Amino acid sequence: MQNIIKDIKNGQIKPIYFLAGEETFFIDKISQYIEHHLLPEEAKGFDQMVVYGLDVNLPDLILQARRFPMIGNRQVIIVKEAQHLFKKKADQEALESYLNHPADSTVLVFNYKYKKLDKRKKIYKQIQKQGVYFESKKLYEKETLNWIIATVKSMQHSIDLKSAQMLIDYLGTNLSKIYNELNKLDIIIPPQSAITPDIIETNIGISKDFNNFELKSAIAAGQYIKAQKIINYFSANPKEHPLVMTFALLYNFFRDLFIYHTLNDKSKFAAAKALGINPYFVQEFQLAAQKYPMKKVTQNIAYLKDADLKSKGVASGSMTQSDILNELLFKLMH
Image 1 (spheres, helix red, strand yellow):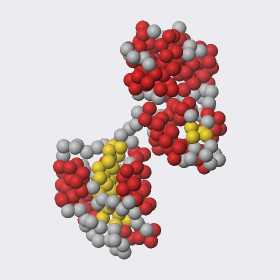
Image 2 (tube, rainbow, N blue to C red):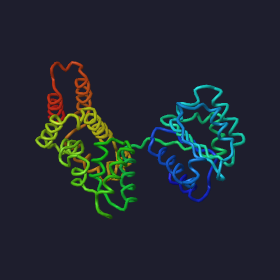
Image 3 (cartoon, one colour):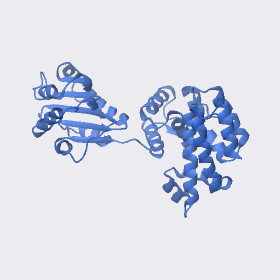
Image 4 (spheres, rainbow, N blue to C red):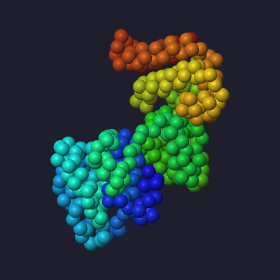
């Protein structure tokens, strides 16, 4: 993403930008940069057009792309939700024809979200030749953690690993949601200050003591009373702590603990590489491995699957969320 924006800043502007993939955050950022910076303000009303895939068809769009700008040297056409285009063969053929000789004075941007082009097709090769094809992939949790740290640094702040993990546990790996919350904190906190669990709790509403990160840590350390207090808090605040998020985090933890047990080299950096985590978190697996042998880990994964089914009404009888969590916790830790 940064390389594309850097090239645009340096005047290396292509006639087409095809922005595809699952992670919409990077697609939006590139598209927004083009929308806000390519044309002067006085030209945008005449030579910039933002349309949506459901509202246009490609032949008309290509006709517009071949027209000359009204007052400047360049026109910009941004197609949002472009995944709704290309439903007909004629649509693809229209773009293929345009890409043979794209207009030098037009920048055509497609936001092709949640999908990607078949790289074996002619249209992909044409885009690569004439412009930029960018595929925005979903980040894994470790990559998201690193992205949070880098983003906070770019805001002239700092954040510790626990605070970054709290955001992931609460918001998932949705970069748009995380960025919005970081942006709020950037406005609220003093320049060059640290984002801490207390700041997150006060301004975002994530409890620094009662969250999935702390629950996982308590279970890993065998701290049953602490874990029970956390799930009781979850049960009292079910909207803020949906079972599906808790089950997913605990399942991933025990899955990774299973992998850790199988490693021949359990040294800090080797284990971190094998598990795809920050080396900081390896100590947690070292501790948990002593409390949960391989057989127990296997049982716990089965218990989690069973609890997930019960939360969806399968063989749960009259069990409440609190009942399911308490039963699960007892089985996991005993």
